[in-house]
Image 1 (tube, rainbow, N blue to C red):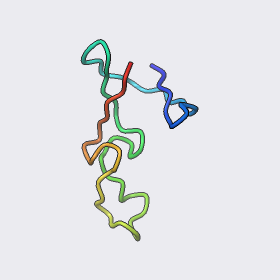
Image 2 (cartoon, one colour; image 1 turned 90 degrees about the horizontal axis):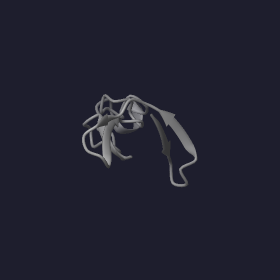
Image 3 (cartoon, rainbow, N blue to C red; image 1 turned 135 degrees about the vertical axis):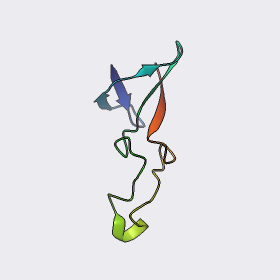
Length: 65
């Protein structure tokens, strides 16, 4: 499924969506890659085990369909 992402919906991501109802689905977090750890991108600033801000460290996020 194609998901438009960003403030103006100008970035396109293609990913697998687990549809849980007719209006929303769950995907792997696009910011951290699905592992919930954002610290791998800037370990010298935030530390090695810093939870992702978008998914709150869960690795999953909801999208509207």
